[in-house]
Image (cartoon, rainbow, N blue to C red):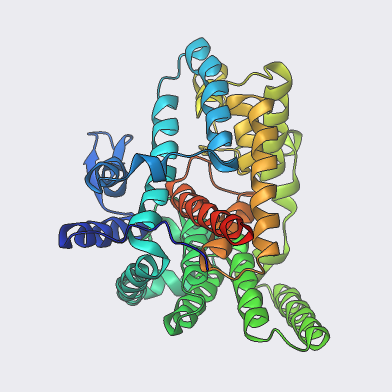
Length: 401
């Protein structure tokens, strides 16, 4: 039998704090500070990350241990030092602080509360999220419907987003929430909302992640008849692609966006003010060649805008591995590739038997085309994954003895 390391001793205050944290963690539009010009703001869940970490009174012996994710964070922190102090972008220290504290908080949450209690809280939060989404969509119904016929999501400018980061992030966060609740009835509701939201928001990433969760859900529920379920899912995906291809020919903008990715593939010589991912990655490769040691967390974007004078409405390079390579040097980029590949392989080996595995997988795969890499949304669950994996390994070792 595997011996659990979970302490499972917590007060009513701890339970309330956990509910409050996840409520603000998913419902991110709540801010505690906004500057007079609106350019600087602090969201509530950022404040709660270090506060919760301290108030949960975690056991250092159980929470502080070395594994592949923590070793990566050590490499990232050390390699970031050069860029921070050479290029002077001190805000990079905040990026590192919230990345590390989010990771540690995830470990503490697992050790203190366990998976079931944590998912119970997330399930309750999902009901609040769904309610807010329905109220928001009803209130802004003309904008919601208008987005289908408005090019490049321009109709979403006056839309009220529940999460931070715009339509792609909100659609992806919904898919992560559906992964966390994949074994619960409400998970189907969240997954349906994720698919509808992804289509309305014209989010290719959100829809891809939702289809992946749907596929995993189908495979989990149908472990027998492997060939038949494989053919079924392949036909389903091909059918979805075919439908969108046909509808894109009907001059409905929303479907044209899903199929037409030409702008994303344009290089810097083909664009004016709008940067697709290929152009961002081309810029990033030039920065890496110019300085392989990095500019510090968030420093590369700051360097482009303040020192070079290049204007573009982005705060990251839409690829986590590239982001780490530019910010903290190619060593961090390579370390991240090894770290993320190890998690993906381990999750597949465990046959996606745990919702945390699936949620982390969704974050890492969607990180190929979005996220900054310093996202609490990813690192809290990577922290939970880390503590869970340690317990799994410890249990196997004890059984072998």
